[in-house]
Length: 435
Picture 1: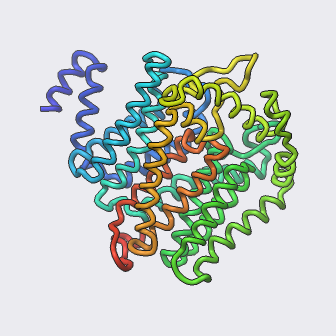
Picture 2: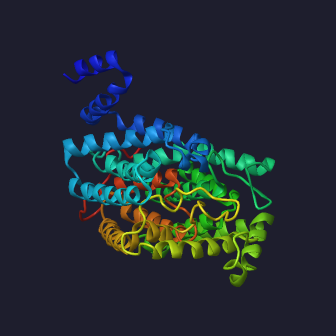
Picture 3: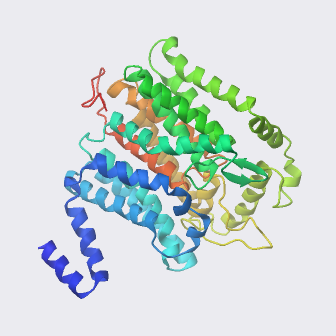
């Protein structure tokens, strides 16, 4: 019936076919081969991130490839939830929350494709976690982690090549590698997640040399971006992984040793040591008085200062998702329209106290669910999930952790797979240990 209606719609107008195509995808979602599907789509998303996530995209209402990928994830997730009903209540709550604050954005800035863009983008991140959670363990933790390794390896190699050839993105007079990503900061956080999951695979899945090599590759790629926020996120993940790892102290040493090596390498590089000394010289007084600061920390402090008055205009409900980046900058104030570089401040302005409080409740629920999967079940997958969340929370203090869509996708995929692990006593082998 759907195919007949689709043919009739196409015959009259391609525009009429779009809703039916969406309905068809929802209907057949359970038949989609999830591993090759996500592998190809995520690889395309990572390799094209530099063009799909440029700042100009935020100020247009057109639907590009990144938007199409986001809608694709939403439709597949909807189909899986409808048929399998795993996590239906939590999914509905997340959708309602995002829908509510997207509606606030529409009420504040008017209805347009640009206004709803952030809501769609964030629901697509949630959708990827829902897909992993409802995959009937097809996307178990070993498969999900391998997918992240595969889709990120080429970009990491590109970043190291840029380091060797002095390529990348010029920021404040410093050439910093960004791989295939839109910015070194977004590249660093994706690489940090990939490094952490590679270390987890090495420790938990038989100490394979391929996982050790990939962990070293992604750690090196993270350092090559010279992102202090990315470095802090990686260190937080590695230290958390070591501290939370069940077992003897010798088992915990992997995370601690890796963190120490990363710090040594970063400080030993000329640009790394220069960045640290430069940020250490930041004057809080001068940062609060002008937007053209000479350090990234000073610029962040200035930007946060400009956002607090915006929050005070609507302290309870905020101004809606995407409101901090939807406005274009001006020559008089370059900080306007620039990303906040602090996810806590961003959500405070965009969702107000009500939104932040519900987010904190959701975060507490997530941490509790991950903690119940630490040390029992699928090779201590809960430890990996906790380490990634902790790293993201640290990175979010001075970066745009989830405004970087690829970081959000990587995080959601891993967490969805971890949460799908049943809470059980003892450790059990995965369905696909060779993944």
